[in-house]
Length: 412
Image 1 (cartoon, rainbow, N blue to C red):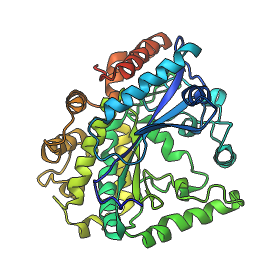
Image 2 (cartoon, rainbow, N blue to C red):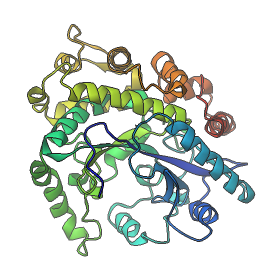
Image 3 (cartoon, rainbow, N blue to C red):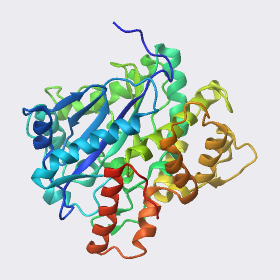
């Protein structure tokens, strides 16, 4: 049995991509055919050394992930880019390809949703029966999940406190979903807005998305897991969903693997951009966990409600969102500011928290774009230039598909 990983000794990264028709860019429910072509037999997952592929809830989404925790984020973008190339090669003979981004811009989930029908289907069927998965919040969303390890209660508490503080501003880096149903939504992060509401039938499943104050396993089970399991029981008498992964908060404790999984990051245009987002997010979380600007005791005092208000603001405005909570800014090191844009916080983090050693050159251009031009959402809207007709959307999203295939950032 391997020794437990301590804080920031390993990183689990999961990237979700859409499978689309290579000609029309409409969603193409072919994840089972892709996995079968990759493995040589029908399966829900396949391993390629240090990465693996797996199915998701719907048939047009595929997930690439590190096959266990990676010791560093460096080099992962190239590894995922190789998986993208392999998948595109397998999809080409059946007329498919991968598309990046956190949501398909014109998918009609009420008409086009096809759930994974094979192994593990009982879980997806239960979700569908209880929550009705034919909506954007279930059937049309792709994210990067970032898993950070801990060992023991104190490390969990420090990590969870730090993640809770950084989580509200993460969409100011990662928002990539300005279009749903073929039109601009007016939101930087339409995926996260849909995600906030996808389990409203049972509010205990997602809470306020920002997790409640819980800094030991016992506290977490008492305040989050037990109320959630009690609430789901009348709808899931067989206990199919009674697992910690039912938790739909923006960061969830995975005690079965001693990690916290962050779920609020939209997938970007290419792996280099995803890993650049991950690197800056980790740097900020690490600086907060090290009590660089506020001690742990004060970090633990933050209730979920004020943090959730900041998150909702950032979902709407992305990097342009104005944060006007001086106490929050103080907790993140901006001690002389009463308000500032979310982008200014990330510029501060890039300058003061991002290490110069262990910096992958592949992240440089994506980070420069994020910090000077804004989120992928803003760059997509700039490229559309007020013209969201289907023909124009296809042109822009075809360019995004090319960015993914070539592992290069999208410029406005």
